Length: 195
Length: 354
Image 1 (cartoon, chains in turn purple, orange):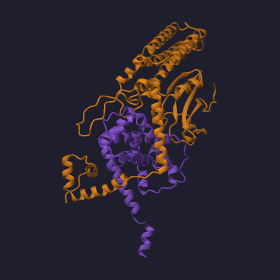
Image 2 (cartoon, each protein chain N blue to C red; image 1 turned 90 degrees about the horizontal axis):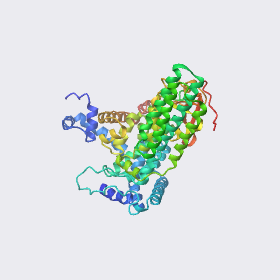
Image 3 (cartoon, rainbow over the protein chains, first blue to last red; image 1 turned 120 degrees about the vertical axis):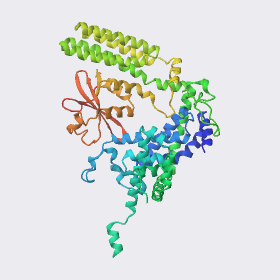
Image 4 (spheres, each protein chain N blue to C red; image 1 turned 45 degrees about the vertical axis):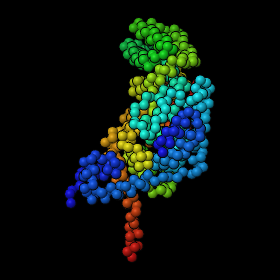
């Protein structure tokens, strides 16, 4: 795949539209998955994915094969998602004190999912992921969705590799706890089963 | 059973990622309990890594839009650089190596002339700000000679002059900028002289000088970039991550200003002109650096426009003419950036003026 990517990159850098089309199609699903996991909802993920593809096209001329195309493009996608999160941070949102039991007291970065993300959470994994603070969610997504190694994650997020390692570990443990708790029957269900 | 090490979770997670040191691998593999944890975390990792299908029509629309961008870039490059028809997007990037070849340090890619020109454009605003700052210095000195007296005016005038001279260093790398910097420097010297003499320049004398500086700036903005400027930008390219170096000029200039203080501007329009050139990231950096949780701002006074926004919005403080203002940024519908200019004394939103 990497070798094929290199050939396609070279052709796309030479102006071959079909080569770029093929490159984007190959990596679209992974880029979308990264954006979906980071952004936390469909609408922001769609915007971020579009921005990521645009950024890849604009930056292709500067891509020099020092990393694989997949790694580079996933980093570009990550940065596009971070931009989307920053935009979302500055979007006015109603206070959530009454309805959500003190959420408004938390830092917005740590409050996931956000207001409009509450409507439907079809994906259990996404719901669990949304409960992680961004500091832990980002490294986990970059590792498990994008496949970046610790050094690449550290560079992308601007934090030391040791911090990446501990945040991934803590993020995964927390996710496992959330998912495990979600699979446990509720008190009512247990009582019904016993009776 | 051996007790688990205190960093068991770190070990297990790193082992799962193949990033554990050899001695850590030994520890994990010798403990059945740790291996159980590895299996549990692997299932979480696999869930996260599972592909997520996007709506097919969305995928097609996204790729189509990206290809359209590609086409427009090609068109732009071909119009700009007819000589690069053979390799219009990247004439000077090293050829791709085969997968079997050992990894070698590739030379940095050299951006095309159009890339260099794209990166060049925002820099003109540096000198634009310099010209505005120089004008502000001259006007301020003149105002100081009229409205203020004693050491206070001297202190403030020197501060503004420092702000004006510092960014001039950033643009001394082109002939045009040199010329402008020289002019600004001379304007600064004139301002210094005026300060020393305390009444050395009048408002009527300052205005033509300011206008001249602005005119010179306008001429510089319209001037085409000379070809060797492309080499200048090629020399400092290390941009495989797609970093946007173009925004750094304006951001650095604002960062160089006193904390939170954007400057003195003759009109709202001139202030907005400078703000427009900052990227979202640049504005974010400013907003985050101001930490309005510690600095009381209009955002803490429950004005309707900012009442429901829980994140910092303050971009900075400034003077428009002689009015102290606060600049806030919020997002409107469709992610439209909205700049609010508030009177710093009573936090009323100022109406837009020319």
